[in-house]
Length: 147
Image (cartoon, rainbow, N blue to C red; front, side, top):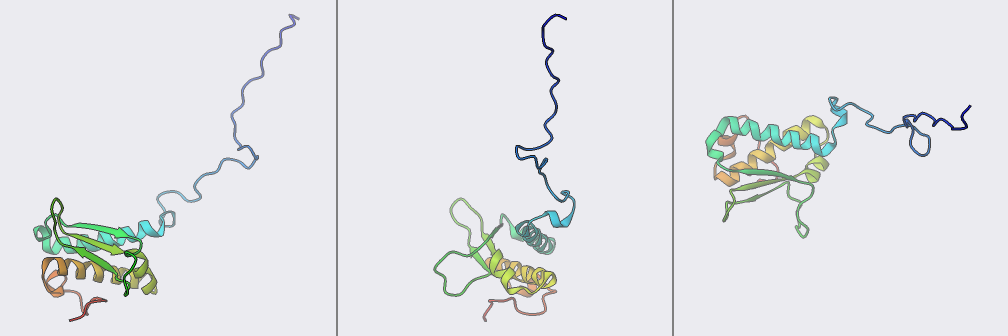
């Protein structure tokens, strides 16, 4: 015996400081439930814009479509979208408001339909076209449209 103590081997830490174990995601990324409601809504808007883009193509130009949670404060009626014509340094913009749409839709299918109607209505307003020219499959006036 030499009198020197041998160092203990280092063990991998498999628990956090409270002994609960490693925390991580409960669902793998590939499952639909792993996406947030906001991410799912963004996908609905992207699908609606893609549908319109297939029909109109280059007429959309440099249109920017964005999703915002709620509209700007101070509006009397809660709008489902906001349009901004092209300005200095930017193209036309369509801003879709997520929370008002989700509150008016009763289920997934009605939310999909309402998102499509809102996107079609906003693009029609920006381009100065009738709704039927943007999406001929629309069978009724989009919400919020008064003529």
